[in-house]
Amino acid sequence: MIFRLLPILLLAVFCTSCTAYIKVVIDEDPKATSNEGFQRVGVFNRTRQDPNRPGVSNKTIIENNNVAVQTSIDGAFNSMLRNNIWVQEYDMDSIGMIVGFDWDILDSLGRADSLDFFIELGSIEFKTGGTGSLVALITGQSSQVRQKLNGLMYVSFYDLDLHFVQELLTVKHDEEFPISLNPLEAKNNARSKRAAVERVGYQLGFKASELVFPHVVTVNRQYYKYGSKSINEVRRFIANRQWAEASAVLVLTMDDGKPSKRGKELFNMAMVQEAQGNLDQAIELAERSAYNCKNTNAKIYLRKLQESAGIRVDEE
Image (cartoon, rainbow, N blue to C red; front, side, top):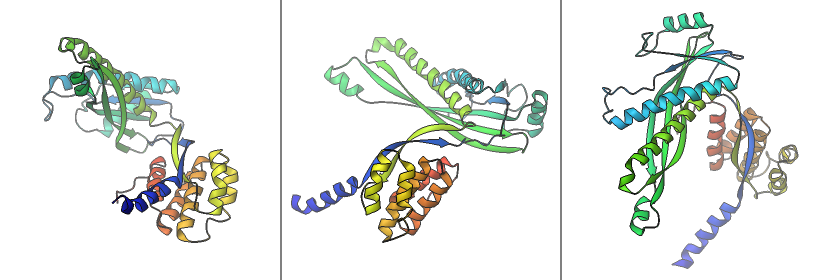
């Protein structure tokens, strides 16, 4: 049986070794549409849970959400202030916007405080998970485990000038916190979780405000090491981040040869263009690799590029 599987295993190892990964620093556009050169922003907070709302029956959920609400506002404010933006919180209940939104109210507030747009911090969702607690309890290896708190917030933006709404963008943040397996430590466990909720809430608010600013981020990018003479040549340039040199080699050969070879060279060229900040060219090259040359890896990469460019694509 092992001899029958050996060719398949060797093929899998060979295909895996054809590619490598490199960390690339790229410019990422803002996820949210905002006025260029904006200076003044209003923040609405809809994150408070209503105990009478269907699906909300756990008192702990409501309390945790309200804890996160307070710190999310702090995070949103600090993000804006760090970028020298004036920001003001508005109480939605007091202005009558309990459900939906009203452009007359928004315009009135905007005129009064010379606002450029509003950010709405929407509902927060939490999930708690952990591993190893049962094993640790049975074996006695540990009296404490770490749990992970996953937080997600929905965010919307209201452009006062264009009356444009950008709804239900999401931000996520995870935090680990210690939990004792001793039943007598229930109060300490509750405090530990509450502290994690506060940290998650702050980071969610901070990330929500950051959606309107461009970023420099580091991403892990795949590239082909083997497949043609030019790919063999540029792998050293890519590994050393010599993007101009890699482009000069690939541009001479990426339209020649068999589709499988072209697909790999186009893929590498797309990655090189993204690394140089040429996102439009990278998307075009990835599309050619994915659809003209039937490169499966390029289809996955193309989706990442489209997400970076803020292009919404329906799932295939």
